[in-house]
Length: 258
Picture 1 (cartoon, rainbow, N blue to C red):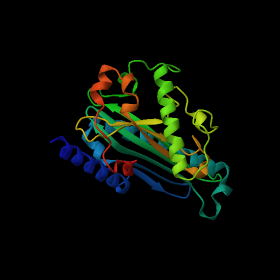
Picture 2 (spheres, one colour):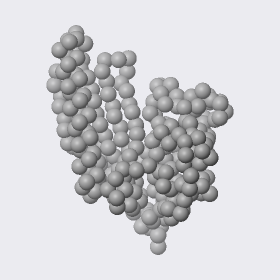
Picture 3 (tube, rainbow, N blue to C red):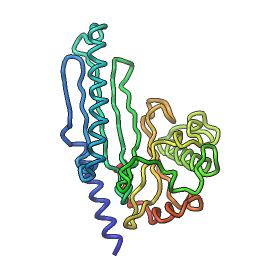
């Protein structure tokens, strides 16, 4: 009986990803200095306090981007000749809802006259019960920087990244020594933006999804990287809380929502 429910949840998330791409911005401007906008997935409105925080954060960055463009226009107006202008877009998108844990993928796209636009991807994990942002530490028995759990997770993520690079026909060295992959370190802040993956089992997560911005684990031309680590690869490190959260398998096609 669980599989149809899990499949329905998967379809809801897929529809949410499409809706987020087409959502009307909560704030936008297109003037002589900047084209800027903030888009928040409408699916997140069912979590009012979370949604309000995302709106407030987005508007702060939006206002900061507009002020920066205006100041640059005032001091260096030639940068804006021939119709050139700055660009800023903040996007917050629902990635998974595994009660009470809500995973959000955040993208910040900017251009300020450099060689190319910049794209930064990160994640947020919200606990709807406590009404607070959190990280994945409570799901593990031990999670000290440099400790055995983060060493294990960092290596699992490097191995997954190496496999992804090979699938793109990109040359990659040993996951433990490759120059680019060495940026994935056993620190909670250095293993990528982490989201909980949906599962075929209702109310469970199938594992961790790690997001990396361009430049983080490869040259800019390689773009963003997203990799999945199934929970069975780190199951022995889970705390009682984590053991109740993880289970099942990743729904087929879920990677299309990355």
